[in-house]
Structure formats: C-alpha cells, structure tokens
Length: 260
Image (tube, rainbow, N blue to C red; front, top):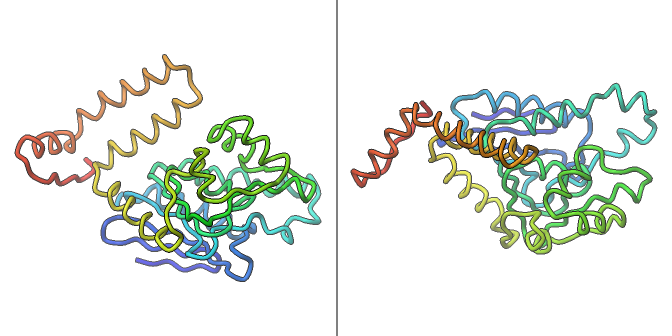
C-alpha cells in the first residue's frame, strides 16, 4: 500500500514495515507547516495500524531534512507561532507506539536533527551532517533540541553544538551517542530496512512494551522505572506470543508471532 501527498510519501510492505519519506527535494526537505501536519497525521495512523510493526523515517538517500523552512516563519509574531500549535504535531511522532528507525543521509539540521531525535534508532551515513544551527539566525531550537540532544550526548557536547551552531558528521554523531550506527552513505537505507525487518519479526506486544517502558522510565526515579518494567514484564505472560516464543525455543523452530 502506498499513500502519496505533496510533502510526505508513505508505503507499507508485506512485513509490516512502514516507510515514511519526506518529499520536498526542492527545499532539501525543509519542514514547513504542511509537511509537519502530514507527518503528524501519518504517524498517528501508523501508530493505530495493527499491521504496522516498525516505521522507517527518512528523507531519501541525499538529504534527511535541512531544518525548518525559514520562509514559513520569518515574519511570524509570537502569537502566530503560538497559534500554529506545532508542539502538538511533534507530539504525534513522539507518541507513536511503534519503533521508529531514522535513516539519515546528508543534512539533518535544526528541525531535521530534532526530527531524527524523535526516532528510537538512528542509522547515519558517515558523511551525514547533524546540527542545531538555530542560534545563527537569532532563535533557538523549539522542538526538543535543547532537551533531547542533552539527554543523548550530555551537557557539554550539547552546549557546544547549541551555542555555536557547529555541525558534526555521522561518524562524530555515532561517537558521541547521537546515532545508533554509522555506515557508508550508500548503505544507510538498506541497513535501516534490515534493522526494521529484524524488529518487525519480533513479537509486537513485547516490542511496544519495551519502547513504552524505556521512554517512560527515563523521566522517572529508578524505583518507579523498575516498577514499570516489572509490571510490563508480568503483563506479557498473558500473551499468546509469549507462549509461542517459548514453545518455539524448546522445539528449536522459528516462532510465528501474531501480536496477541
């Protein structure tokens, strides 16, 4: 199945892997309000689709997203920015219960870097370019850049990137913990598909519980996070997939997971 819109293209394959691709090559996939709305709508739908087991988020093999479309916001007033309610559109991506793999080639700057950080796994090309250069045009990150970047790489590295607007390569992003993997640029899309395929073959209930507990536990005390983990761990013993997985292990065969 494939759904085309002006700024975003979505397809879902037989394995349950959804590919969400930004489609504004003339603007290096800069994020305007329309693209953000479409991303939010697609992620909301994919999160509720029982046939979807993993999502790949990409801009293609040339550029991920070069940031916010400044032409879209340059003349905005504070009230204009408030009324846009952009945080609600970003939240639809952050709240997606399905694992999200970002495949990053080329520029992932500003809002593009923030978009990548909404994913659960980032596969970066060696020559990918990550950065939060908002300070260079008189503003600052507004979609989680100051918070997600700090949680990913620590205060001192984040401060350097945010206060200078300097960029880093895919290799540097991997070294500092901003990327899960770094591969050759022409292997990014294939590697993202491979990882998504591995995840899609896992029991969906266990996968979504892992994601939910990990993210919720980050902002909780250790005791509270461990309690969430225990509850989710116990809950999975009510699933058919738990019975199937363990039976397949004992019978030395490949399990068949249904998400029930």
